[in-house]
Amino acid sequence: MDNMNCSDARIARYKAFATQIRAHVLRMTHRAKSSHIGGCFSIADLLAVLYNGILQVDHTQPNMPDRDRFIISKGHVAAAVYATLAERGFFPLEWLDTFYQDGSHLPGHVTYGVPGAEASTGSLGHGLSISCGIALAGKRDNRSYRVFTLLGDGECDEGSIWEAALFAPHHHLDNLVAIIDYNKIQSFGMVKEVLDLDPLAEKWRAFGWAVKEIDGHDINQIENSLQNVPFEPEQPSCIIAHTIKGKGISFMENQLAWHYRHPNDEELQQALAELGVSE
Amino acid sequence: MRAAFIRSLINLARNDDRVFLLVGDVGYSLVEPFAEEFPAQFVNVGIAEQNMTGIAAGLALCDKMVFIYSLANFPTLRCFEQIRNDVCYHNANVKIVSSGGGLAYGALGATHHVTEDLAIMRALPNMTVIAPGDPVEAGLATQAIAGLPGPGYLRLAKTGDPVVHQRTPNFQIGRAITVREGNDATLIATGGILNNTVQAAERLAQRGIQTRVLSMHTIKPLDIESVLESARETGAIITIEEHSMIGGLGSAVAEVLAESGNYRIAFKRIGITDSFSSVVGSQEYLLKGLSLSVDGITDAVQSLLDTKTH
Image (cartoon, chains in turn red, brown):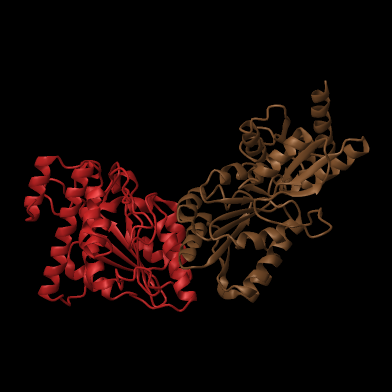
């Protein structure tokens, strides 16, 4: 593992941003009585680094042809993605209050048309193929942009993921980065018990990807890996981020229930207090 | 129809570098000229239709016009959810082209019979559904569908399909082509069964029954005006399709007639009954068993008109 450190100030900025995402997600899911907090929290640190130090995107020009693309393939973590986009200025923070609500433009799965959202996802196993298409267009048009795709681990049960996993190395899509949120819990149980993915890194390597495994909550490791893509020329990159579902809240970590539950008033207060955020 | 499609697509690509062709490891002795002339706009994605459809959507999100080509049900049913979510929900500029429409792959068996595609594609928001009646229409349909900003489905028959149109017809998406005039009944056909339909109309003419024949190449949006006009002017409508009786052309026309307020129409659907082929056979053999041969269509029309006059 690369030992190069981020500056302390940058680390603090990323951490503060991740805390903001988690706080928004808590308030949004509480208000909406919606779900999927666990997966939102396992990717919060990844989103914080992507949107503050990696992605070349500009909220004032959301359709800039050479912008980097971020595709969230596990579209059910919409609350975290919308919170990120709003914090980055793609749309007003007040919109987050409308998440999941009647007449809102922010549905429970990430939807194309929301400023900053590059594709609609929600049914699992679609994002990597769409990303391959965007990456292929970039190669054929000699564009400089990169495509970062965040996948869930349970999502890797879908055969279409492995169709795309075959395609990207064959076509030398080194402008494509797949990040796997390996939080080890899927909808109905532990990944190991439902449909074991291990050895996951070896699988991606065998398919032709350049793979790194990181602690998906260690800001240094996240930034170092994302700054160094492509890991190998002519090869797509895969970052397996070992994460914790519900990361950051003591009573949510590694608890399957928080794939489904929304916090009640008391749990909201307790969770915000643990984040060090006031109501 | 396949050859007409690829010729038309090559012409399109010569004038528009947004045109991409993706194939699912099919197209032997068909797509090579495209691949050779436009290598940067061609990809054989392998036998992976879900991925092919997602890739097409991704390319379209980068302003490409993407044709995806495969056989039978592979580019539609195998990857249906990718068509719904990745293509239609994004209103992406992706055209799905399937070869082997209807029973064209006769003796290959029911896995290769394309008999529910029109119903299923028709149900999707943003999707335009086209089944050309002969190679002339196939070439024109390819051009026309390229002019749509959003998704389209093009159902082709096979190679060596008979030419129905001796002169180039006026092909517009959503406008039926009147192939034959007549006022005793209207035969509305879609796809490659148009040829048998026209022959049946000629046979009926020998018996003194003058039928109008419409090539309803566009199933969605349906040419409602032509259906209502034919109902008004001929009083009898027979739909003919190489497709399940459920949800395709016959259903679409029935929906229009049922809501039209004109309840004096004699109406019949000819198509594939709600079953898989129980026997092996060529396309011609199977069509015969389904009243979709020239004889079968002729008899069905005659019997509807006989019932009507009694």
